[in-house]
Image (cartoon, rainbow, N blue to C red; front, side, top):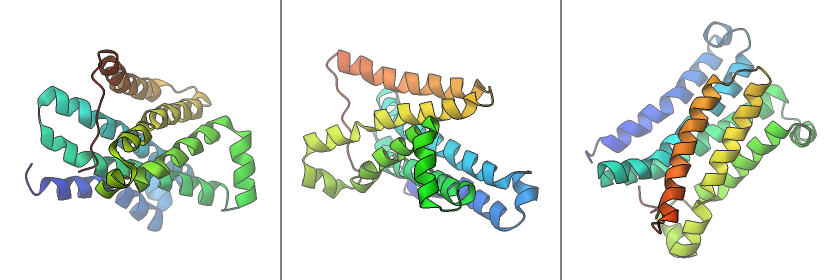
Length: 205
C-alpha cells in the first residue's frame, strides 16, 4: 500500500463531517434546507451506516482481490463508522431533544427505532475501545475475535433502525440497497463459516 493511502482515506472519510459542520456553522438554511436539524441527524446516521458497510466489505474484498493491504484500512473505517454514529446520536440528543437526559431516556424507551439505534451505538463502544493491537494481547485473540463479531449484530440493528425510520415516510429505496449490501456481506461470512472457513480479523490497520 502506498504510504499516502491511509492519510488520504482519513481525510476523505472526514470530508462529510467537515461539510456538515461548515454548513451548520455558516448558513444552515441555505446549505441544509428548511429543516437543518433533521438533515444533520439524517446525514450523520447515513454516513455511519455507509462506513459500517465499507468496513464490513474490507475482508471480502481482500479475499476476492488478494490485496492484503486492504486490512490496514479496516480499523480506521470502523472507527469512522463509530464516529459518525456518535455524531448522529449527539445531533439527535442536542438538536431534537435539547440535551434533556430524562426526555432522551423516555424517548428511547418509547420509540423502537431509536431504541435499536441506541443499542447499535452502545455495542460499538467496546469495539472502538478495543480496536488497537494491544487490546488483542490484553484480551487474547479468541476473546477479541468473539467480541468483534458483535459488529454483525451492529449492522443488523443499524439496518433495522434505518428501515423503521424510513417506514414512517414510506421510503424504502435506499433501505433496499443497504439491505442487499448487508445481506451479501453477512451472507458471505455465513457461507464461509458453514464451510469451516471462519473469518479472522486482525486489529492491525
